[in-house]
Amino acid sequence: MSNNNLQLTSNEKKLIKKLFWRNMFLGFCMSYTRQQGVAWDWVHQPVYRQIYKNDDQYWEAMKRNLEFFNTTPNMVGIASGLAVSMEEENAKASLDGPFDTAGISGMKIGLMGPLAGIGDTFFSGVWALIIMGIAISFAKQGNLVVAVLPLIALIPNLLIRWFGQKYSYKLGSQYIQKAVQEGVMVMFTKATSIVGVTVVGGMIATLVKFPIVFKTKINGTVFELQKVLDQILPAMLPLALAVACFYLLRKNVSPVKVLIGVVLLGFALTFLGITGA
Image (cartoon, rainbow, N blue to C red):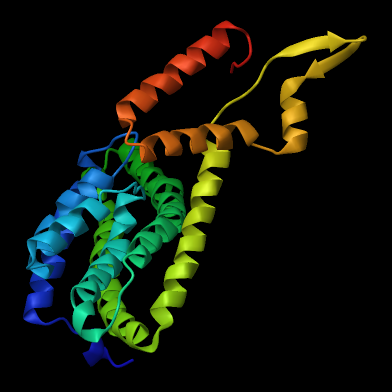
């Protein structure tokens, strides 16, 4: 691909600059149910308004993107650029052919895990340690260079934010239109949906904790309920709890009520000696 195809027009530069600065506030609004979902909507609100002239389409995009999203803020530009290019293709769908918006959600869910893994590893596990090691050595010598090291530490962050946003948007806008016309987008939507479900399943198994500590003796043999459940299906109870919460949310039960119910259930089972740390 030639460099000319990756050049931004004046309008695209304004859009990328707007997203670049607004994405700095991705972590300003976190919640247990949506994590960065509300902030994502705030970041992209003026862009959605620019893309969708029709009020119904605009509010549909706002509601659709108010879903769970959580990744390393430094890496969000990649997902943001792709998402905006896909929203633009969706706005043109009436002219170019059908566009399944499930592909946008699938892309976000599919990318947020890998981007977080790369971003957390590099920025928190590698880059931060390098900068701190250099800073400590300068600080011991009383060298004032240590005062500017935080600014140097920002350089990779800003570069990844800007160029990640730019190239994901430009490459996305060029290939997504072709994919829609050739029908590849349908396959992409199904693939991202599978990846999204896999990511959510992995998060349930690793992040949802439901440990059973109940033990008793039967004919002189120690019976541990947790081991029996693990033999049937590992992470069975976290899965059951997640499915139950999902079912209640689909029935329009308030997320706050679901959270309170989970907390009360945890207290009750712990008090009875069934669950615990």
